[in-house]
Length: 273
Image 1: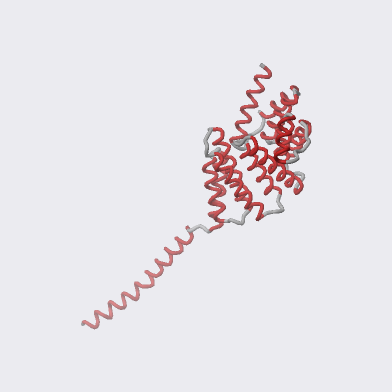
Image 2: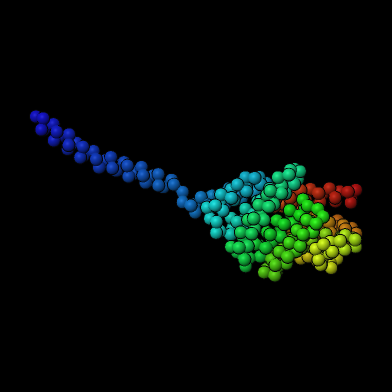
């Protein structure tokens, strides 16, 4: 009787075993199907960053793009968006008068340097160096501002040489030319005695660069606003008003462009006032 019971128990166990194994295999399959791949995680991080950027949440955008960059450190798209997000976050903090702005501009420079090492033949690599140094220069004065300006000039010219149809470096160079053209003879002489030759440029040279930037990218609030400021400095009221009016029809891409659009509207009201 005891032997029969043992045989019955063993048979019952053997019959249950396939069911248990089948359950375990099915559960494992479900879990595996729910586990995302690194590529899917990377794409999800980029989408999250794009959404945050669209709603002007620069801190969230930077965090998401940083995660994407860690998942794919050799990918250009994540690196480019991360660099831009650092610049955007720095600009937001400048607007808020926070001392942390410089931290993010320097972080942008670091990522732009990585971009240059990994993608030395792309114009964007040099533009982002120019843009990062240019943003940092806004926080500086005197000698540092001039030194950073020379970096901006060199990187912007390199970007244009690599891709003459890429709009952003023309805008950066136009702003640099305007700043140099606005120096009085004493300021220029002092700068050249300390740092060597400065380009012999005029407000018209600045205007030409910015007009080129607008022609290549008509949707850029930044380029049009800088062009309007150049017309203002040159005393061309008609072109200034025209350019300011055009800015109202554009869609800002980041918080800086949104601020420039608001400033353009205020200037236009004052001029028409």
